Image (cartoon, rainbow, N blue to C red; front, side):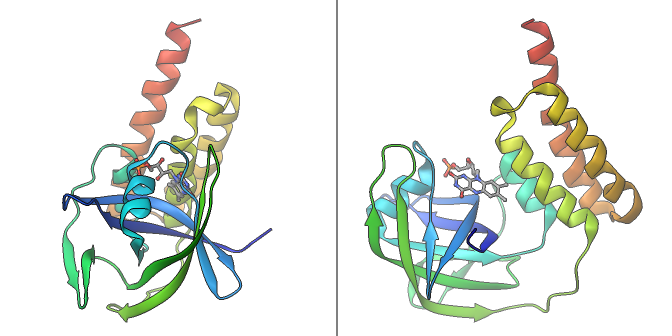
Length: 191
Ligand SMILES: Cc1cc2nc3c(=O)[nH]c(=O)nc-3n(C[C@H](O)[C@H](O)[C@H](O)COP(=O)(O)O)c2cc1C
């Protein structure tokens, strides 16, 4: 399996709108592959402009917020690039598309790192942050998973939240939990 970094991408549409979305970028030698499913705004923007900023952040609220309709996170300019980064980024890379593998469901944009920046120190691993990341991925796949599997995963991830979360991770967890509960209620009502 390839190595994947879980990141937040910022992209810009041709008419100037900035878009923020969590995406895993896939290592391929010295290049990084962006692989968004169709349809998606990230895909349309990368297709149109050939540029994405990869934001490396451990802020659980940004991952959870993007998955629950909270996409308005502070931005900061990137010198020499018209796509901004997240203000909260610990570091960022500017990715430039060098080739595209077309696909009906999930095209792959192979990118080179055109520039990089460091902004804040990394302050260590935290199980609750990791649990929020896993729960965000779970929320992005709710419609593909059986309710039993969703309930089991939430019960397991909650252990790390209960033991190690700070207020930000608790808030992020709560946002995701709301989505999970709403989804399970919908499934139950449709039975
Ligand atoms: C950690 C994480 C990694 C993700 N990686 C991908 C990915 O590689 N490809 C993808 O299409 N969606 C991925 N998603 C889901 C997208 O964030 C979500 O579908 C998003 O809305 C993209 O669509 P948009 O560009 O239209 O906003 C990921 C979500 C999370 C939480």
